[in-house]
Image 1 (tube, rainbow, N blue to C red):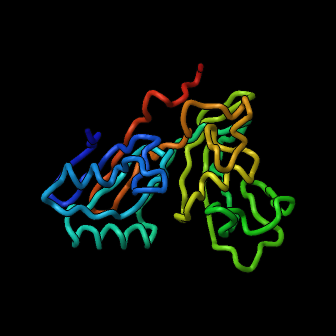
Image 2 (image 1 turned 90 degrees about the vertical axis):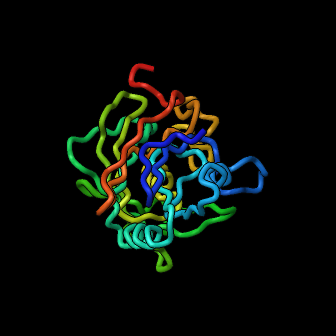
Length: 226
């Protein structure tokens, strides 16, 4: 059954569960999109943005083409404000907003990487940048604040300013704080990174003209005293 946050004649807002692909993949496992279409039949739903298989949280579904066009333009124009929660490896404490401004490019086997060398990443004040970015890199920017910290891990509030594929996962891995449970961009064999699920959750979306939608993580989410 779908976890519905809000429903109207124009839009369905869901809390996507972790570990289910939004669209069909090579595994042949059931995908969330087929379930959404079955639940809304005979309506024809329209996808306007995506969340990774392991990422949970707020997902918007348009219920007609005019709404799809409006929402798609809003995402493309970056007027939708997106906020994620993530548990990351290591101590990253700050009382200020930090910016990761590292361009991305496609790597091998459907992965993405920073468009430059790791040893060229430089932190100055509140910003991480590349001293010599590759010319083929795509602009990519993430803002973050720390909410809780220990010596081994930190809970971050993330705001992706751009919307590149795997942006948050790549940025955090390359600045030395991979998301816990991330088997693609981290070190899954590491005890520090061990987690019951990918610890990345779309906590809130603020959509001009439609409102603000938020969702809490599921039971596989780490707690501060775990």
